Image 1 (cartoon, helix red, strand yellow):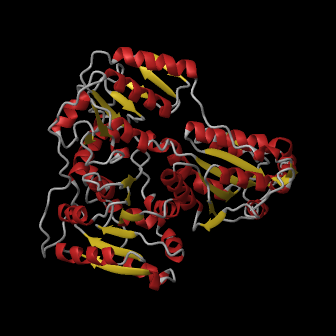
Image 2 (cartoon, one colour):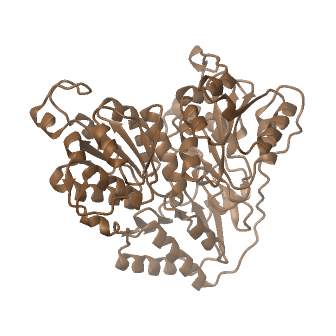
Amino acid sequence: MVDDFSSVSVGQYLALRLREVGVAHLFGLPGDFNLSLLDEMLSDTGLEWVGSTNELNAAYTADAYARVRRSLGALVTTYGVGELSAINGIAGSYAEDVPVVQITGATSTQASTARALLHHTLVDGDHGHFERVYREVTARTEILRVDSAAQQIDKALITAIRESKPVYISVPTDVAVATIDGSNLRWPLPAPQSDQVMLQRFRETVKERLASVAQVTVLAGPRLHRRGLEAALRSLAETPGIHVASQSGSKAILDETHPRSLGTYMGRITRSQVVREMVDTASPVVLAGVVLSDLLTGFFSHEFDVDGAIALDLVEARVGGARFYGVLLEDALQALQEVVSELGLNDQPTETSHFGVEPVEAGTGSLTQAEFWSAVQDWLPAGTTVVADAGTSFYGALELAMPADTDLLGQAVWSSIGYTLPATLGASLGDPSKRVALFIGDGSAQLTIQELATILHRGLTPVVFLINNAGYTVERAIQSPNATYQDVTSWDWLAFPRAFGAENAAVTLQASTGEELLAALEVAAKHTDTLVLIEVLMDRMDTPTILAELAAGLATANATRSYPA
């Protein structure tokens, strides 16, 4: 490791700062404008390079890596062609509050100043196009200069950590290798802190607002994950008088067997009428890290009082109409727990239940979604990271009763199909203590299947459920089920490990009936030391219950174009 901080290259400085904030792996692809940068970043810094099969996959991988580590993820692309390939993944990180560092190896300072007509540019002399594009999907952009590179890097990383958003750092080829004074590396970056005056005002206002309540209902959203506040939420749930429901983007953030867990809330799609009423009639409801988007609210069918709520967000809090700027989510959650503890509330029993998927006996006929998820429910081990792609996979997984210490990872807001295959790589490397169970449809997998090669060659051991239902079932459920654009070409999915040169690194199975699925799950349970790929054959029109209801909501919304203000 570099030990003389008084003289480091810009590339080394950036790498060492990333290591400091919890990044151990760097994803991406090489290109002529980032080769010198990569040489510097990987020289004696402790970062491990993970070559991706394309830049979009690298962005997806870094996103999932950041999610499971509750820290930053980072990728390196080349200028223009590389960074534009990654931008969809970075936009998803922005939409879902994931702090990813997009690092671009850029044209030299001299070339940019001279407006040189280089390859990978738009040959108009303007080398700033793509930095301006990234301003739309990141919280901060920086084009590094030698005289201020250290400060620019520090400010970008501080922004990513504080706001839980992606940032963009462009490193010109000449700047990447320039030597700078790295003395600041002797001290860690400052941790985000709340405004203490505002925090105290918030605490007093919450105490006043809750003075007459009998119980407190908390709706826990995905932003709690981004701050790594799972333990803090569990501690809050131990406080008498508290009950916790979760959004679909944060399912099982509190173990669903916990006596104060209400399970998942999705407006009118909520499985339990008791849970829906407890959230919708709470006065006030506590919205902790909540996102009020269409799919997370059952198409805006939530009935709780948003304006009168106690809302805890990433960098501010609110009690009714009173806003408390600069109050961080973690501090607001702690203040809430202290207030409720002081109130000395008594627990009130609820008649909620967590049955999960209805049991369906495995048979010899064609496998159904209900039969599939019932079998998965019985098989799913504790301590698993469940990664589920947008569509039948995610909304089927939402119906599962998650065992202890099991997380659901998916894109509940951005919903970019294909995200989860690279995300499986990121989750596996980010938290190797948990085996990943990936659920992905054939249409989604066709976008990003290349990253299975990286997973195989690195010896990772997820269980991959490839749901082959002949195309875009989620879109069929919304509109025009028989349209030709809903179809995908048929692939030999089980041949991919061999095609990727890693046949001995995987066990491949196919299941078209319930009995075949049970046999495949037994194999997956035994072979924990290798990747297990199970192709699951199901009817193209069969959908999980939640997805059918959401699809109906989407169809109605698309037809009426009626949305809340």
